[in-house]
Length: 237
Image (cartoon, rainbow, N blue to C red; front, side, top):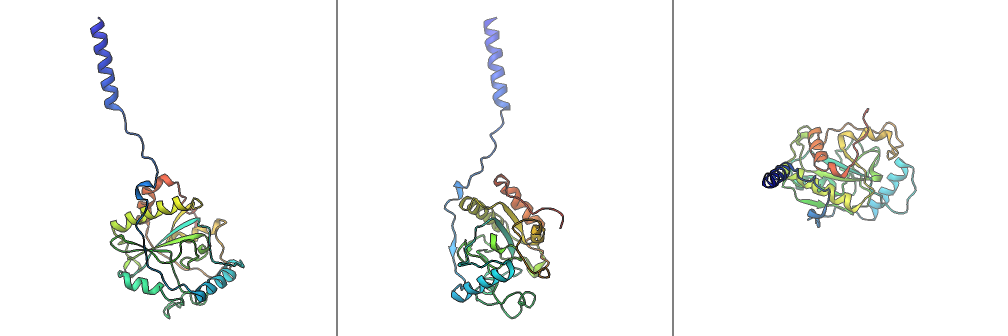
């Protein structure tokens, strides 16, 4: 009887161990620290800084002594150009290029972004992370922009698996560095943020329609960083 009892206990223990499920993954950025980022600065001298201050005053109603921001949003883009060098050159000058007639009335300040990710997943830092870049209407004063080289003709969701992984790593890096970040937003979703306190744009007529970086890319990115509990924009706009 004792042998039968011991055998039963052993079989039960073996069966229980066989059914034991793995612990859920722990959300951590330690595996990607330090993240490899290449500094490739755009032109951001005194003139661009003063133009940025003027933009902040005109569009956000704030008089500021510097252009430092408290990051609360990660805003994801594509460049609509398949070439890294051409994409970089569009952001490098301090003033808008002559073909940006769609936004020049708002300011001659050139568009910019804190980061650009090449097709092979290489991450480039274009300017200080906590300086305001002009990359999205209404939300520049609280967001860090990530430009991804791609989106041919501003229509095709063609960003690469390497870029997806780089964006995952970069989002985790930024959230670890700036705990104030609470939102992860695609450029095509930016107008949905108008219902939040982070929206600052004073000009009700200043809006553009965007398609980048696409629903699929944002869905895959959000799924991969789900453990960070970053909010998507509110529904309804």
